[in-house]
Length: 181
Ligand code: GDP
Image 1 (tube, rainbow, N blue to C red):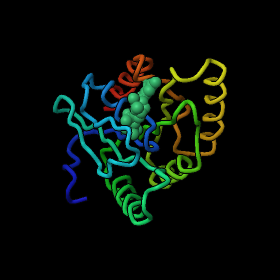
Image 2: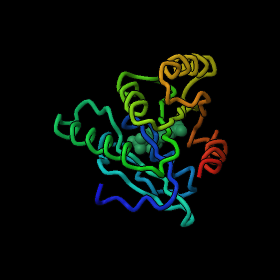
Image 3: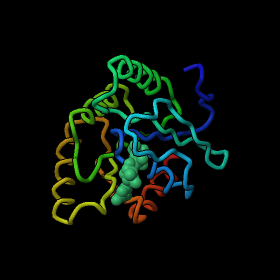
Image 4: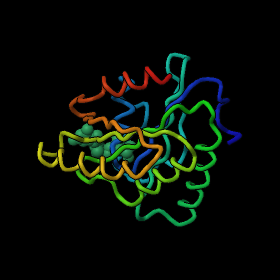
């Protein structure tokens, strides 16, 4: 926590399983090609990265979770860091929990959602890689996500469907962030 920048401006954070498309989404949001490192190596980024936007707020990139091969110690360290972050930032306005359109909400996502509930951090789900699924699959995953978040008091009911590749939903997400910070 000591290494984090002072909580002197509003921020939103992004969480998601490794390989969910988090780096690509942050890059698409900010119009930068390699702000957040997009990588095909799941579980590589273990730090919390703070990006300053226009000197006004932070976009916070949380480490990807749920990487099956991650050592237990790494997972424990990550959980401690995440808990400290979520309970320690009074300036955090909302967490965006990224869900892969092909996979829907998994058990590890539910764990993060429960942690957000207990940390009293409102979260909103963002479907990623929507270009990779057919319309019917997308509707099915939306229904699955709606069912999952209904159980979480900290969940904001509206989800955002995105594709960083196609630019879908990026403006919507950007507008939501603008209302928060
Ligand atoms: P991260 O580990 O969550 O940061 O995921 P990355 O942003 O590195 O993306 C993981 C992989 O998914 C990469 O191969 C990306 O090119 C791919 N990817 C990310 N977003 C999209 C998307 O919107 N559409 C498609 N088709 N692929 C994507």
